[in-house]
Image (cartoon, rainbow, N blue to C red):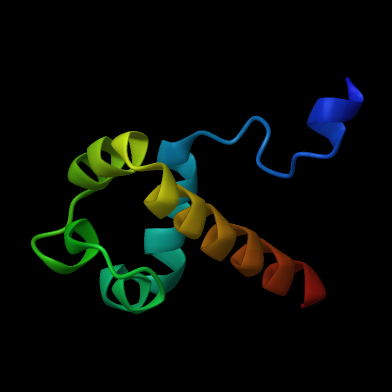
Length: 77
C-alpha cells in the first residue's frame, strides 16, 4: 500500500457505501441538518443524492467530513 492511500481514510470506500452508512446511521432528516442540500431535504433517495454529490465537489466534501466524524465517534465507543 502506498503512503498516499495509507493516509487517506476514505480510500476504498465508494460514495454509495458512504452514503448508505450515513443514511442508516443518521437518517435523511438529520443528514439534512448536517449538510443543507436539497437532495437530502426534498424527496431524498440514494440515487438522486449520488448524482448530485458526484457533480458537486463542495457538497461531497461536506458529506465526507460527516462520514469521517461518524466513524471517529464509532471508534471511540
